[in-house]
Image (cartoon, rainbow, N blue to C red; front, side, top):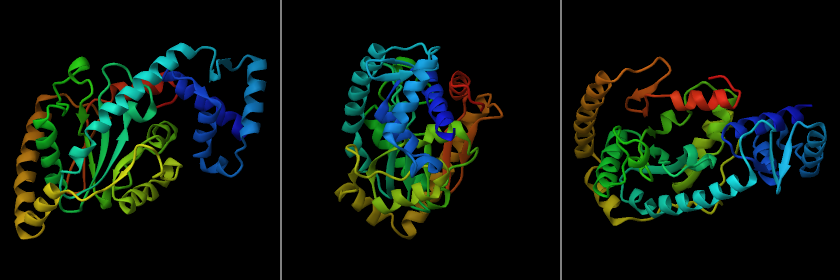
Length: 303
């Protein structure tokens, strides 16, 4: 019974994304659910899906499964997959820029890129792991580097202006690796799909261990991941800012950034569900959760 409910919940969630799933995708996603991980069986899942189809609870088209009320099709999914491949290629072209950022521990791809529900105007959400005591320095150099290349998404960027730009909205240190609650089904599904693309393996493993509520183990064998490599630019900056001078620089850029953040927030109406943090351990800027709330309503899950 537990597996039956999990399968239907999964199809309901991805139905809200208008993204039907293959049998192997359902198997992979269910295998990341701790209560089912050891009991999962591909044949059993397929058997349950066949029963759902006979009862009219699930539809199947060209190897894709979805709920009858879902506004999607296998053709739409295949077109989205082509776009997703293109988005990944564009995103990975900018990966070398992250290697130029000093005191950076890792980069994780999140949002629509990780979930797969991209569209033409999708940007690239990332979670950035930082060395403790240097979080504002890491943000400063990310803003500088990606701004110089014109691929940093700004708050004023929307739709086509945000297309294929890097959204630098979440920075964490080892003290804040465990993401903030709520720890319920919808956030589990949203964060279950985050993809490591670059960084220190130990730090990435620590991040996933800290977030055991997500219900998955880290996969550093995925085709997108690259281990953190030697970079002359970042190493030189780390050498210069590794001690007292670095502490002074951190305090300076912290003061400037917080002043600008507060000024920006003062101009905007922030709702009560906004996820805004700016301290020495975590920087998170999700001032408008409307899209997430709309997504959760479509997937039948509460915020």
